[in-house]
Image (cartoon, rainbow, N blue to C red; front, side):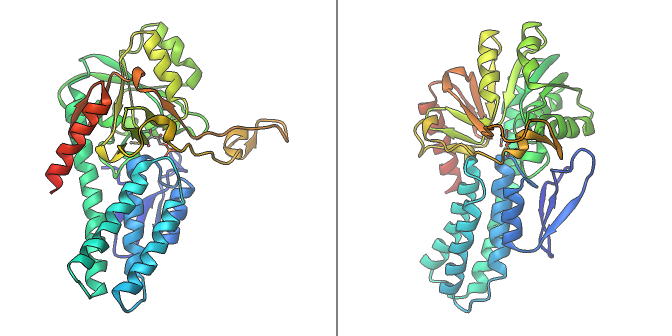
Length: 355
Ligand code: MRU
């Protein structure tokens, strides 16, 4: 099983995804600042993996807090949450995980716990719970989503929404593909390379090849052509944030793929755990879109491809309007339009089970 991020006695262990597929190197992060930095620099990336990493980073930071009271610990913890929240703006799993961790302190205070060591222990337990729940959620997504994939199909995916984008194991969009294969279906994958960070070419291709799942890489601008040639049966992508009405933020270029899929009558599915659904944001217009360093666009590795001084846009995500999405596959079932109702219903099921 691919382990993107792991809690150890020494610190948080992370696979450095920037080096894949050429090098499989693990980093040991020994402070919450190092974890935050790893999220910012995309050592770890993918919405669920960012959430799990942030939770572990906070647990690690809390365990190193030298205060002598619950109030000291809470003061340090709140500061760490601010640092963590400033790493990447789009994936809502980051903020969801921070709030889950904050909830541990709130609950302990309500229980009148006065021992800060007890709270530190609970924070570590919560981070591990978030990690384990993510793996379980992806298995469930695979089970629900696998049913939507016909035998002998070719699925096009964009970015990497696989084991590498989650706590490990299955992934979300790739979890759907793994779920279908697990159910005995034959599935091949077309992976968009996903400029500029190349999550498709480097990461999706790497993890599928490792699992012997047939994968063909195309450049992003080939998607329309392969669809027109009848080579794509459906599209499955992950999500960084799904608004209450189903509008979905995902890796830049996803919107383009969705429009092309509609033009060719190809079902376009989004796969994500409910922790990616942001009911507090009504529509995609309210989702913050990260803009990253221009160098990711002007250079490939250290090789410069554009003339000096030209203007550059580097939007990391775009929003696919809900009307392009045939279904949203979650860990609690498949949501169909109208999403404002179906997502709310599934979220209520999740909440009821958590109680
Ligand atoms: O910039 P990244 O690599 O963090 O973007 C990742 C994506 O857009 C994924 O598709 C999304 O997070 C879903 S991952 C299960």
